[in-house]
Length: 109
Image (cartoon, rainbow, N blue to C red; front, side, top):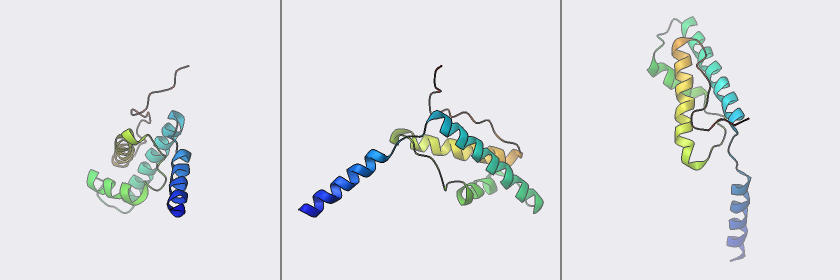
């Protein structure tokens, strides 16, 4: 019984330590992701490979999800899709896609 209480307390403490990334953190992450997409484009071009959505999507899952910042549980899927699309758009075009997190309201001044 004591072991269950200790485990439950540990889980609660871990959950309390999780927090959502701020708007600025998410915007910075989108900037970083867009740059990764540009770099993937450059590597593909240097190899003479075709640069299309399918190849960019594979590159995204291989390269870009290692440090995805936390978000509220309800918007996690939307946030991951936004990050993925930013990478793919940048990869396909070779220029950094616009980085403005649509799944999080911008701070007011």
